Image (tube, rainbow, N blue to C red; front, top):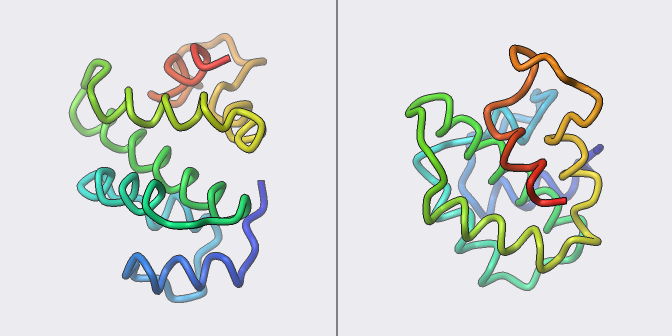
Length: 122
C-alpha cells in the first residue's frame, strides 16, 4: 500500500515523528514499539480520513511487529485493542491485513512475527 506524501507529512508532525522526507518505508522507519499505546490512542481520538487511518494503522502494526521481535510476547491487551480496530473497520484495512498475513507464504522463516496474528483476523 502506498501512503500519500502529504498524509505522511501531516501525521509525522502530529505524532512528533523524526520524519525527514527521505524515508522509503515510512511506517517501518517511524515504527516505535514504545509508542504503540500512544499511536492507538491517537487513532481512536482523532477524526481521521480513511487514508490517515491506513497510515496510522500501518505505523501501529509495524510498531507491534517490532515489539514482538524485541520481546517474544504472546497475545496481550495491546494486540486485543489493535485487533478490535482492525475487525471493526475491516473494509478499510483489507490491504493491510493481506500484506501482513503473507497468505501465499508457508515457510515460517519468511513470516513477520505478527503474521500468525494477522491471519487470525480474516
